[in-house]
Image 1 (cartoon, rainbow, N blue to C red):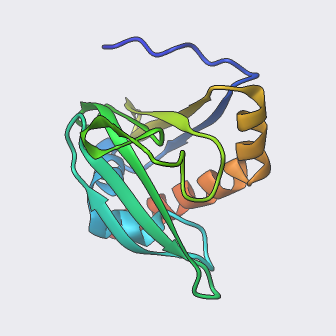
Image 2: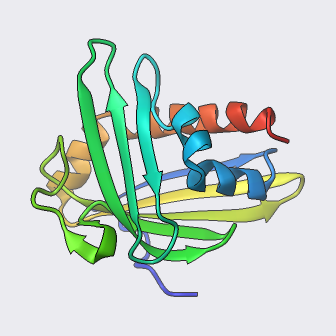
Length: 165
């Protein structure tokens, strides 16, 4: 396993949950566009487009739509893929490891997400470790609603995947 920097409380954000959803289903929810579109952002927003090229250097892109019809695109690049165990991607790059012309579509920071999926008794331990370059970027991401947004989205993932079991 490739080492990722340890959690740094001044630079990083963390969401960790243990759920009864099987690991293979949590993995599918993160890697299959049709499933990801059902849970990836909290209502009243929706995901109207999703592309996944699940390989190192492959692109990850979503378009989210606000209730007013405003569309916000986001893109990233997969860095590491360990099926059903780990998914690492960054918003600093697009597919083919190409740097973004701008860091992201709606913010002035980038981050790297290290998602891990571990077997637990009757379920999965999910861990989302988001690393930022500066404390300011971390704070901005937190102030944008990281805990509520990523938490709500993950709850939605669990609900969507209950129908897939």
